[in-house]
Length: 564
Image (cartoon, rainbow, N blue to C red):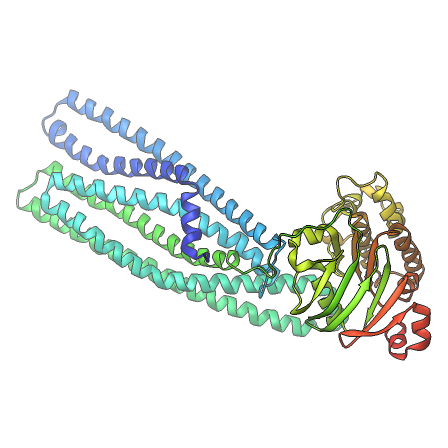
């Protein structure tokens, strides 16, 4: 059953109903006590001040003090509890969104920039969580209106009826006023999230943009996106202004009618001076719950819009489906592709023997990207089959595939933390004690550690930006090697590394991956020279096969690709 915005909103409220209900009850108590204050003042005037009874006056002052103590306590703790529900609900949504985005089956990121997903998981989740506070506030406002109406009924039936009969149409009008705000708030969040995504995308690729001289085009792209976001924000702000102004007008007219009716009754002598004071005080008091109701209505409108955006991420269909098959034990690591068609692949067939170090060369980046997707099972081929030890990957759970097949992308990121922590981040618990050290040596990361102030314990900045491009590549390669995966797929792991270091890394990969299947999608002569076998893929199909030296000598297209 597809997830909708109302489902997200309902779960956010019911998931923490105890906190929300507790906060609502205390807030309602606060508003009821607020409504009692003008009533009690009217009673004091009629029973104590008019009669000059000091004892009666002292008793009612004590009663007023008790009411103020209760309303102060209720106000203090009601929104503290409701805010707790809000934060818990927002945190739960962030965790759910993160789980969906990181789910092995994928699909949540389709059509969205990373920055957009971050905006949904932060701003939209916060707005949905805030509905718990708005609900408590709305309940308290209704309790205040009800208490005020009942109190006015005791003062005067016509006054009480004006309030009690006026509340339902007021709520309906408030709901109608919130509809444009809901629509424009959703558009505002959508455009703001897109602008954030574009900004994050540009910052991540800033060095590349400068290298190719595309700063002007990038600035123009962000300027257009930012202007769209600004226009959506201004439209939402106008809708918010119309909503708030409309609600203020409605509540002002409502209060004026109550005061007018009360004044007329007092002038006709139908109510006492104390009752008139109580009626006027109650009329003034009603402005507060009506204002709260107006604010809560706006929060609900924005919360519904954000809930729809959260639901759109959670409801995204998976990129690949799960499976029930299991891999044989022990895993040999034989990879077989038979007539695989996907993206730029056009009926690709190849066999990788267990323990083989295979080089795959292609001049088309799209071919490499398509091959990585089917090997990592982030996508299933439209035709053909990919097998691991005779088991089709399509029949396996994607998480099971990725425990056996590790794909190290060319643009893999590092994380904040120590150099060693980055290398061991994906290392299995049962890895050999010297696995990290061997991986670092194979990727020439030991050289990096020697020049850092605290060696392998040196902390890296965000995305490892305190290292050079070649150093980041070597750390990412060491992390991939440290996994000890039965099948490891490397995509251009040394493009920013000098030739001498690259030759050492080629030898290190061959040594540390001995006996385990390794596929290298590269054009590096040093890495290809270390491979047991090389397959040249041209036009999405194998065009040549052999040792690197043979292919360089015999195949002009291969030679042009790897020696260009």
